[in-house]
Image 1 (cartoon, rainbow, N blue to C red):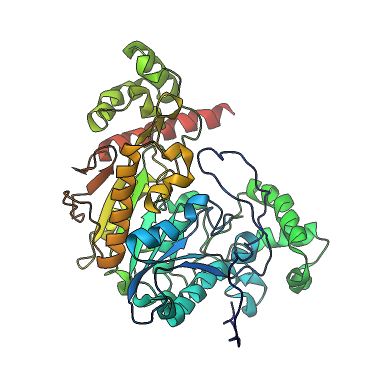
Image 2 (cartoon, rainbow, N blue to C red; image 1 turned 90 degrees about the horizontal axis):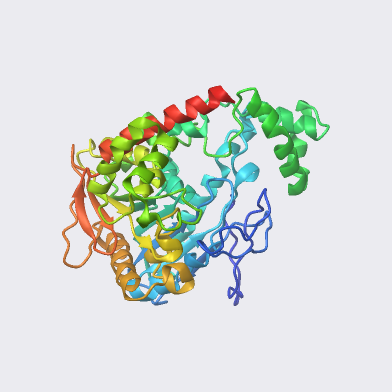
Length: 471
């Protein structure tokens, strides 16, 4: 990324900028759960959006910078209607910034094996985020913001971006707190992105394009659609050989690698973190009709079919933790994000000067006879935007929860400690994950689901192993 040039006069900024080209076309699928917009795509996509309650220099308002989801592969700063920053800015008296950056092959294609000039190609998307943070540091005071009180926050891939930026020395001093929503995954799940092993996917793309390795520079001149199609054609063949094909940051001299695997950098150990997940991350389908009417025997049969006989033992454990949920919702409990998040917190509390606060979003929505919280469902509450997402806008109950969550996020951005009126929210400690359960009634629980998640993941892994053998 290159620093933007100054301009004279007045520049029209009353519109959103281009978003990064997406490899796969947008669709309306899932639009009820997470309403989203389609926007203009162009490689000229390095821009940001700002909402502020004041344009006075010296106002010193906290600054919150949203890093969008979609992995490091897709999404945009305005993809979801819930990403709109106006309500959070007004209610919380903070400056809200959302950022676009390069994604997929534009942002993370590993060309390091083809010459020194490509050494940073594999992390270009994250370098864009650092460039945005540098711009914010230099200019945000003109929008009433305090450049010395910047919080980066994101969900899913956006949470992953918070974590990876903590591992990049060039980002040091550009942010001071981090909020990670459903952003921690097992580093082995993404594939190994650490040894410059992106060479095979690039070679396969060149072959798809009728080019040789010596022609690698021509990739810079090709239209995006050709690059994307070459990747789409090549990736399945390369993956079948067991080679890396992913699009996410690679460990190198500018990125120190996954924090769980390689440890936290000394420079970022003191950064306060707020981290959590939702109860049913990948439960995107309708709830099972009449799930509260199932007999115990029916629940046991369904659980046994999914997890084996041992799964039946987890039903009562689940109900002990979540007494107001339907027993069959045990099958929707997330382990993909929750288990590595537990590990992340256990590692983080070993840093003596760090503060890390934990949450779990467990609200059950009234749609579909009771819909367990899904991936992205907490975002409208954090942004104070349930009015923009009808399924989240359920009257007094969700209004109160929205106030509590937005208040907690804003207070964390302001002071480094999340607060919900009338409830003490302690930081996690060694052996004690104090989890704020965000629900109809918010409350703190200590290590509530560690055993459940551990046993559930083992059963899920065993079932998947059986399926793999059968196939």
